[in-house]
Image 1 (cartoon, rainbow over the protein chains, first blue to last red):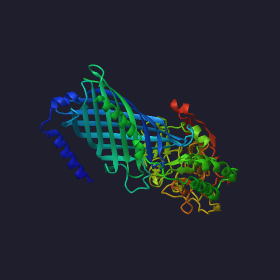
Image 2 (cartoon, one colour):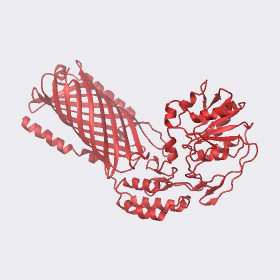
Image 3 (cartoon, each protein chain N blue to C red):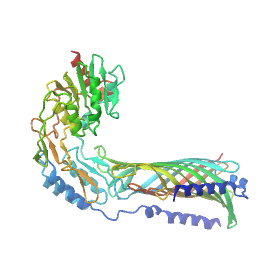
Image 4 (spheres, rainbow over the protein chains, first blue to last red):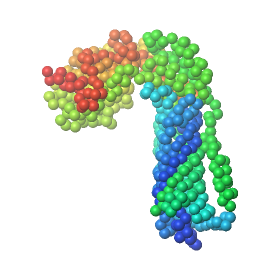
Length: 259
Length: 338
C-alpha cells in the first residue's frame, strides 16, 4: 500500500471516529478502564532473525508492563510501556537472550455500540503511535570467551487501535483491543555491503508489521481496584534486508487502580 | 449467560495459544554437514600455520565430525567456532548469514591489555585539546617540552594515506615524536606504507610475504612526502596491536631513530589478498575467514602468536588507567626529557 493511501485511510478513520453521531459519551466514559495498571504475563515466544540464521528460536518470555489511561468527556488516551526479557530462548542446545521493549500511545474515540445477548458491546477506534526495539544475543560458545553474536532492530510507527468492551454485570466485563501499525520507520543491523538500501527505511505495514491484540476478563474487586485475566498475541516483523519475525502468545494478569 | 461466556473465553485462549507457531516457521532443512566438510577442507587447503602451530588437522576432523553429524539447527555454529578455534588465530571468523563476523579466538596478550589503555587518560597529558583528523581516527598534538604526539587508532581504509601528512606536518619541528598505535587492530598495508615512508631516508627492504605458500617479491619501502621526519621516534605498542598493528612496529624498528616502548603486540599474521581471498562461502551461505597469506618478521618467523616485543618493556594495567595514569606514555615522555 502506498503511503498516500495510508494517510488518506487514516484521515477518514479519524474523521469518522471523531464525528460519529449518536455517541453516548457518558456511557463510554464510565465503562472505559482508566487509571494505572500493571501487568505481568508469561508467554510462548518464537523468533527468527535471518541476520543470524534461518533457524527458529523458542522459549518462554515474561512480560512486564505499566499502563496509564484516561478518558475525557469525548475521547480517551492511553500510554503503555512494555518490557520483556529472557535468557532461555533456544534452538536445540543453543540458547539466546531476547530482550524487547515497546511504547504505545493510543488515542481512543468511541464509535458506537450494539447489543449482544441483551448486553451492549462498546466499540472504540483511534490512531496510535508506537515504538518497538528488540535485541537478541546468541550464546554459540559458552559465556566468558568473548565470542558472541547479536542482532537488533527497532521500529517507530503510526497506526491504529481498536477496542471493545462487553459489560456482563456491574462487576464483570470482557474487554479487548487490537493495535497495528500502518507505516513505520524501521531499521535493523545489517551488513551494508550486502544491500543497496540502507537501514533504516520508511516502510508500510506490508513490509514492517507491529501488531497485537488482547482480550481480558475484567473483575472489579472493590471500589477502585480491579483485576483482569486475559490473553495477548503479539507479532513483530521486519521483512526487509535479512528478515526478522517474532510472535508470542501470552497469558496476562493485570491489576488496575482507577482514578 | 456468564456460565457460557467464561468457558468460551477460556476455550478461545486455548485455541489461540500456539498462534506464534503459525507465523514463525521452522527452517525447512539445513546444510550443517556440508558446512562442516567445506570448512575443514578450506583450512586444510589454505591455512599457512598448521605445521608452525603443530596442529594435526586430520585428528581435528576425527574429533569434530561426530559433533557435526549430531548438530541440529544452529548447533553447527558451535561446532564451527570450536573447530576453527583450535587454530587459535584471531583473524579467523565465522560470518552469520547476514554478515555478522564473529572471531573464534582472542589472543592472551590482547585479553591482558584490553583495558590497559584509554585515550581519555592520554588527553590529560596535554595542556591543550588534541587535534583530530581522519574521522576521529588520528589525534595529534604537542606535549610540553616540544614532544610531538600522533595517535593512530587503526590502519583501516585509506585515511592514513590522506590524513597522516597533516598530523606529521603539525609536529615536524618537534625534538622527538611519540607514535601511539596502542589498541590498533590493523587494517590495510597501504596505510602502513604511507606512514613508514615518511621516516626513512633511503630504501628499506620489506619483510617476506607469502601467498598460499609462495613467496611474493615486494619492492622496498621508498622515502615519500615533502619532508622526512628524522628526529627520534618512540612507537608505543601493547597486546591489542594486531595484524598490521604487528607489522608496523616491526618495520619501524628497522629505522635507526625508532624505539619501541610498551608491551609485546598481539601476534597475528595470516591475511587476505585479492588473488587469494581469505573469506570463503560455505554451502549454507555462512562465511568463514581463513587466512591465505603469511607475513613474516625480518628474522623470518611469522608474527603469529609471538608478535613483536618492545625494545623497552613497560607494562601497564587496568588499575593504572583507572587511577588516571598512563605509564607507557609517561616513560616515553621522560625519555625525551632526559
